[in-house]
Amino acid sequence: MRIAVTGGKGGTGKSTVAINIAWELSKRYRVVLVDADVECPNDHILLSTNLENSMEEYIFRPRFNYKKCIRCSLCVKNCSDSAIVMFKEGYPFLMPQLCSGCRTCQLVCPVDAIEEDKKHIGNTYVSRVKDNLTLVTGVLKEGEERSYPLVLSTRKRGEELPHDIIIYDTSAGTGNHVAAAIENADIAVVVTEPTPLGIHDLKMIFRLLEKQGKNGYAVINRYNIVQDLPDLDGISVLEKIPLSDRIVESYIKGVPVAKLYPESEESMIFSNIAKRVVDLLWQR
Image (tube, rainbow, N blue to C red; front, side, top):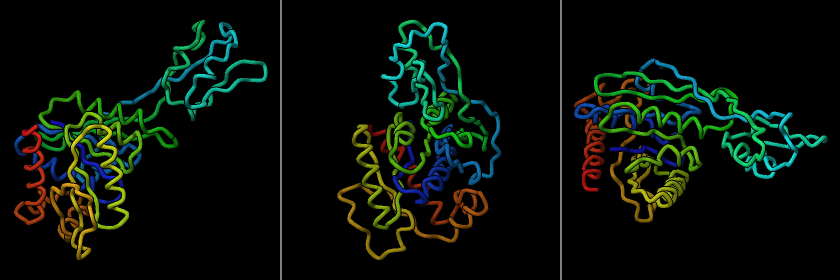
């Protein structure tokens, strides 16, 4: 079973929801939590867990063999990133910051003048949180502009671990880095807040889910900061979470509220989210 925890807007509480439902589900299942917010991963902080078992991640980077190059410019014409330009003398030159490592240039070169090289884009980590709960974290290298390839590497490393349930905690937005994180999910839990901007971005992420053919259910965080919820255009609400001192305390201490206050109303809410998501998956 594969669950994505996502939401268009930043700061809505995606990671808080992800770690707490992961904690609840780990009482019955082997759970792998994948922190795919590689530009700003924080699940390990919220779980007070060290990053361990580092693995460097690389993408393809072309290296030109000018002795073979016939200056046909096919690599330039076919580079969708515009990462290759031609010297005045007619030889190709790579601007590595723009290259996504797609290998198109290597595939179209008629004389095999583009050789294999690699670029370090970041690291992935595997940390054991507790019995039945493992955290996989991707950390993008400082200054690296492309997070998409590292999201794929982080997701893959998590999927290779033994698990009954895998949870993908995505970054904000609806870009390809988010689409990559939820691509393999069976269901999406979309976390938002009851503000005009929160609801606007909620609807955007649901349009992305629709394009991917996935079912999503909203969780309204801090719902009690307003009297009336804005119009959700028929989006199904899985659960509502109040603005709570206990949740704030758990956030500050780096301990899931499900562990800090196991018998609290807040803990029961996260337990209910976990149960309802599993029930929805079994109904598929």
